[in-house]
Image (cartoon, rainbow, N blue to C red):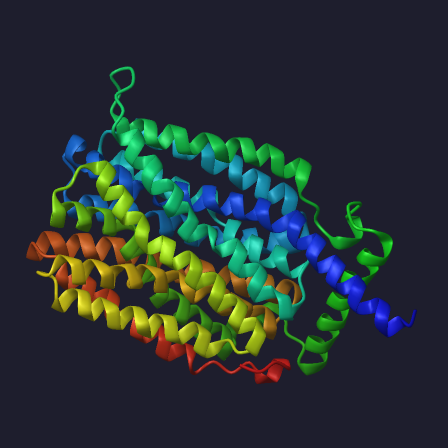
Length: 432
């Protein structure tokens, strides 16, 4: 058999085996991560009333997670590249699991702020670390699909978390408030999977005993060729990468998009509750619907982005569509069916852009420059995770309406989409 006939077979077999081995496990890890990050949105259905928190206090506490996240993000991404993804990710999981359980003990606004800040510190480095880790195993042309499967955990965490939260909030165990049990129940899996991560994950392909020798050689060779292609186009230091026009643009794109994501995720259950006055279980089930749509949209967008080798419009279009549907929801706010259906599309669009977006940094950069830049993009941009929830809560308290806050999200989504179209990745040797 000729070498040309053997190579595609080895490549297809290797890519399939790596995907089957790593992606389901990483998917579960991110479900746990995002669940623990945003479960405060569901807990808020009872917690704010129980602790007498205003919308401003709740929004500030929900958003302050991103401050802790910002401070420790870049070092975490570099550790994954230069040390051990397996050990660092395991450490992150165990730490944030413990802090999530600690959330169950808050009684005052200050305690709430501190616990959310510590949760951000504990989880910092996880998402960019996984993005860097995927570059150790998947070629550029497969990366958006792999990223789509991994990031599909964002909508899936809400699909799972919404009914789970509704069920826990309906329970009354040992005389303890149900929202406190929510944090305990959702913190324990992070600790368990932190231990499993040390056993299950492998840092590099050449260390993977679960691949055959020819499979290890094939994927390592492909990744080395990709690295060489980037190096021949331009040699980037960490400092140059973090000061480059493209990295700054990527950071701004994600910053404005994150405002939309967290503003929506944190406040949507409360908006549904106040608009319908339905029981918590019904509210949480309705709150899951945008993420059912988002799961399909994210996977399709990642697949189509890889198929067409185009990234910018696959990033910008979902953001424009989400902004348009948010405008419809605001305009028809008194027509609940129309407004709710529009918000379903908004929720789907807040995540659909992510696979194509996160394929962009690794198209431009490699190794430590990519790791540091991904950490910078995610850390600075996640300050939008503070701005979104806080400003919606602040404006709601100030105006007694969610409309000003939703208009703010709309503008941010448009800004994010427009900035994505100014990106230029052709110098890296890729189109789109």
